[in-house]
Amino acid sequence: MNKFYCTMCTVECAPIKKKDRPKNVPLCDECRNKVLSIYTKLVMESFISLSKEDLLKIKGIGEETANSFVEFFKDKNNKQMLIDLYNSGVRIIN
Image (cartoon, rainbow, N blue to C red; front, side):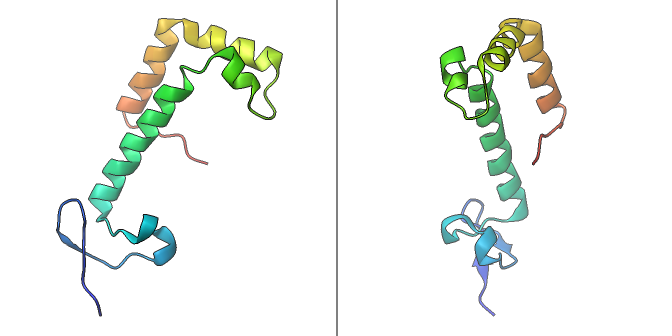
C-alpha cells in the first residue's frame, strides 16, 4: 500500500478516497479541518457583506428577501452574533 503524507504538515496520514481528495492532494484530518474552517469563515464573511444588488443576482432571492438580509446585517450586533457563533464552534452544513 502506498504511503501518503499530508502536504501541509508532512505527517503520514491514511489514504484518502480519491473523490474526497481536492485535486489529489492528501491532507491529514487535522489539516483538512483547518482548511475547511478557514474556507467557511471566508465564505461567511463574504456572504454577510453582500449588497442588495449582489443578492438580487442569486436565483430565488427577490426584492423582499434582499432588503431583509441587508437590513439585518446593517446592525453590527447581528454581524457580531454570527461571528461569535462561528468562533464558538457553530457550523452551518448542508
